[in-house]
Image (cartoon, rainbow over all chains, first blue to last red):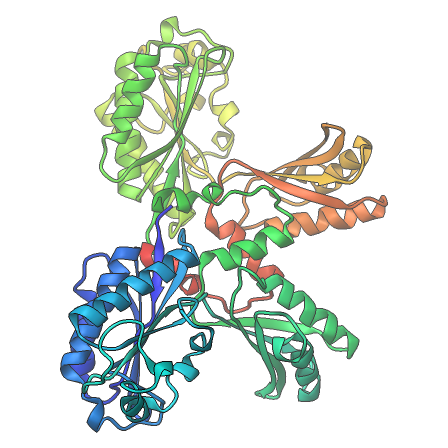
Length: 296
Length: 296
């Protein structure tokens, strides 16, 4: 099976189009990368690039993007609403297909080493690639932002980077890591009573005793109550598990699911898992999907 | 989206491995074809090749296979248990992805024309490509087999081919057509009472008043009752529709579905349709599947 890694680097530039274009071009120029999405926000002064490739191409694409960003973005003059600490602020690798989390962690470490050595930038490993528990959280790593970290990096052992120098230049520092694919999954109910959606969300979400890889809130969208969720690891907490629990909770309040929606993209596996569960297809093999034979 | 057509030519040779190899090699040598399966049966003296490609590659692959078969197989000395009328007995085109049935019908007509003109073989269009209602059924087209058709083709207007000469040489005649993808779908029940599976099959199958694109029978497999089905057009009679009806009927007899299985391959679309139905994903677009962006 073809290996696919997704990489979603965030760059601290959302206003100068020529800079954004140069960074995206540097990524796209690496053979085997495919840029799927570029989202720039002027207020945040930040750009999120989504690209995919086989593991080596993803690593090289991320490195070339970071090199270009370091040459073009100066954090000493950067202003924007979104917290940031580097020209390339954060680079997560995300397993999509035929790749394990461990392989993505290894990619993150190799990329961190290269950015530290070749670009001479401080690198903090975060999320699944973190080398210290307190660095699993990106906000914790980025605490103090560029200006705060610049002051502490040389003296505070808690701020010692995993790779690169113990000092910050104008390109700042970069967080490099690996994390599961995040699915944005919204479920609509046949009621305008947002309180029902809020109660369901409370039962579902991890933070109040629910499912481990679910973030949830209840909102009103165009007069319809909606349970709005992020599934932060669909391989462990599956879409069908989540939807069936929403259905059961909704029934408790005399409500029902009218439809659901996925915001953005997701790996084929997430939908295949749902199809196999609902159809009770024990023993199904991915290479029974005809198209999968063509990608292998 | 990448266009994928499946083509499953049947050749009247299941014993001489060098002939089988030469035919498969002729198909595989066409750029853009991918041979997925070759099944030979010595008793039937017949080989079924499954290959895929974009429409033009599928057409060329089928033509090259037919040309090679016509050169190497002599129907005047062919003996086998399976009914047959030609060296290349039948060639169906099957839409898999990004291709309509109408496009496959057009492919069948173009291939029939080429086989008739360039190989000077009689060609009958069948299934969805049939030009007469009585030719929709392959057994009807093949009635009398090689020997019977050879006698009638020059005199009986009902046997006039769609393309090629009104006479049979040693390579016989070929049926060329288009049909939907066939899914072999078996559902197991938590009972050893095969009568329950037979009753469910009777309710499900088209021939006794059930769903239009379902063939079904009840069988006992290793002590477990099974509803064994062919779904002959999953785009019109969906897997989830079929499974939910089996579930409902089973409940009527106090039985339940323990698991189901797919025999062989199927297009991704069939499982996506099930996932979207069960997850109530109205408005889902295929390009939200990350892998689909890479195949486009």
